[in-house]
Image 1 (cartoon, one colour):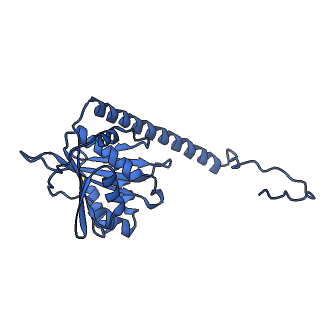
Image 2 (cartoon, one colour):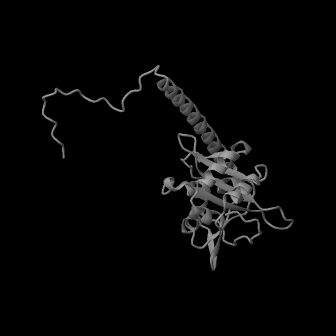
Length: 245
């Protein structure tokens, strides 16, 4: 959920475990999204179930409200991250929204994430959180926070596992994570993850285009589509093979 209100930073000091988590390779390729992905972001969010929209935005967002949210995304100010499958579908995305700068106050940013239901249970949300945390740290953000419904247990679990402090106020909760200062290691790690994300996406694009080319050939009858696996021929009077336990 994205909320623009200013929240007080946590006073919790970062520990060694949090530092190691912030620099841990992500393993799942994550790519920064830009204005050209606006339609794909819209398609992803419109694919969320009514329940998922409620948890993501904090209210049962209609199609029109989702469209206004996507149209209002500021790619110059904020960071949007996505994970694509082999069909180039956006299966998970995160929005890191930077609070407007206020003189005399530390920088803060809010995190929101959504994952298509069929891809849950693969830690995609947690990986997107780690990626956003790394970028926020390198941008000099001192506090990253989540504003979510108290019933949104998966979102709050992601924050707790990262070391965030969670405050519950009735039906809503906020999680605050104090970020360590950037260093050379954190900047190099982010640059490496950026390269991995771009390379992975280019490879998926090439594989998808090649598969589409083959599908077109098969559709025109110019190439015989192979079977998934060869089926051995059997004599007409042969006894059926015995089932193996």
